[in-house]
Image 1 (tube, one colour):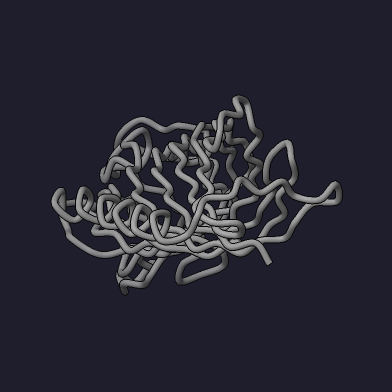
Image 2 (cartoon, one colour):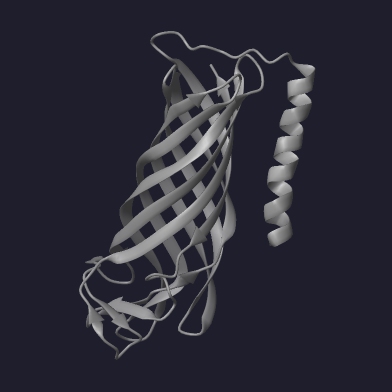
Length: 234
């Protein structure tokens, strides 16, 4: 996994360097009303074990959810936005597959995220742009065979929530219309709702293991993400 994490950004940067050598770099200045763009993104996600620790449970008399520990993984996404002279606004859809573990069992999960973000330029050198990254995210995490009903039958579980983003990065034009963007982002995600075999429930009570202390709170899931994007102005 570590080799994949290292090789992917290196290959992307190498490809960008080749394009930059073949096409003269022109630092584009968007029109006053902005220029629309499309981008593709690859990302590396590392979920904190704050509450996603693989030992907590959530449930009621009808169903139980086994809170997973989500392992790091690579993901991909697409986005659409508008670039101004002061920065960029965009909306992105990101997806990644993960190995998980809970109650001593191995399984898999898919993390999906709808992200609204701004990249505000702080430092404008030629041609590099340094920016601050802020935004909101709306995540849903589907975990295979992660919930059980009151008869002991196993089902998939889905956790839904909301979160906020903060980070920093750089933007580098590689042609008159194409640009590279790299961001290191901290996402604080709160999963507020769980869907399983029965009617969905609000996440308000978490228990350590099955008989441990009770915590009256939502499911906290901080995430550290590295995003590398290639954008094209329309």
